[in-house]
Image (tube, rainbow, N blue to C red; front, side, top):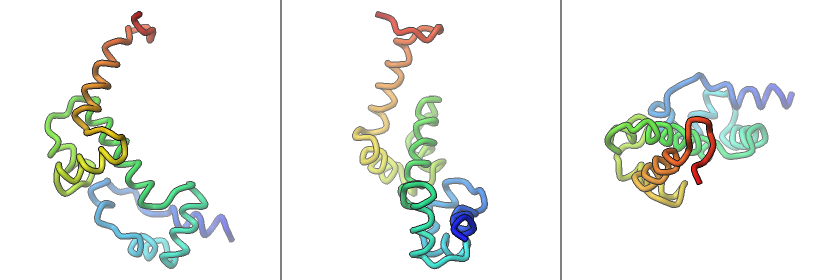
Length: 123
C-alpha cells in the first residue's frame, strides 16, 4: 500500500516549471488523489523534502543551466523557470544560493575559464 501511495504522490503529469509554479499543494494533492497532508507526507517520505522545496530546487537547477548557457536577461530566465518577475526570481535565487544570479554567473564563468579542456585546473 505504501508504494501505491508514494506513487500517487509522485504521479503528477510532466509539466514545465511555469505550469507548476502556480499549482498550490492542495491542487497537486487532488491530482494525485490524496489529501493535502497525505500528499505532503508521502512526497517527503519518497524524496526527502517537501513539494515546495523540490519545486524550488528544480527551478534553481534550471536557472543555473540558463545562467551557464549565457541566456541574456533575468526577465527571460525568470519566465522560463516560472517566476512572475525578475525581482521575484533574483530574490529566490539569492535565498537559495546566497548570492544574486548575476554574481553567480560571473563566478561560475570565471571558474569555467580556469579549467582546461582536459578537465585539469590551471595552476
